[in-house]
Length: 152
Image: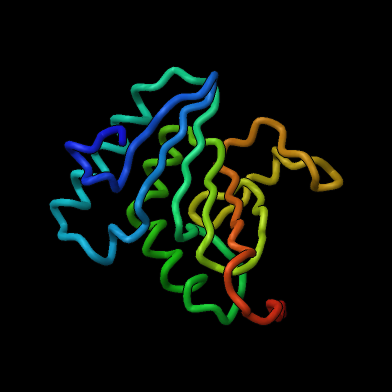
C-alpha cells in the first residue's frame, strides 16, 4: 500500500493518467487521537498541494454531505467529516468527493460550507461548468435493506 509506513494503510494517494486519487479512512474523527487527526490533515493538505494533475478525486466511506433529513449520518456524521476535511478539500481545489455509508444515491451541486455554487450550474441543472466548489456523490446504494428515503 502507498504511504503504509506513515498511515497504517488508512490513507494514501496515487495517480492514474491526469487524475490524482486520494483514499482515506473516514473513521479518523472517531477512533484516533487529536495528534493522529492533525498528522492526517497535514498529510492530506501537503499531498493535494504537491500534485500537478488536472483532476483531484477524494474517496472515503462517510459523506461530507447528504440530504436524508431523518438519518443520523446525514446530520451528525457528515458534520464531523466537514469539520476535519472541508476547508482542506476546498483550498486544494478538489473536484470530486465520492462517499458511501448512507444507503442511497445522491449527486450534490458543487457545495462548500453548505453554500451551493449556483453560477456553475446549467439551466437544466445537469451540467456543472468549472465549479469553484467540490461536487459530492453519495454512492452507498448497495449492501443494506433500508427503506426508501422519505423526502420532505
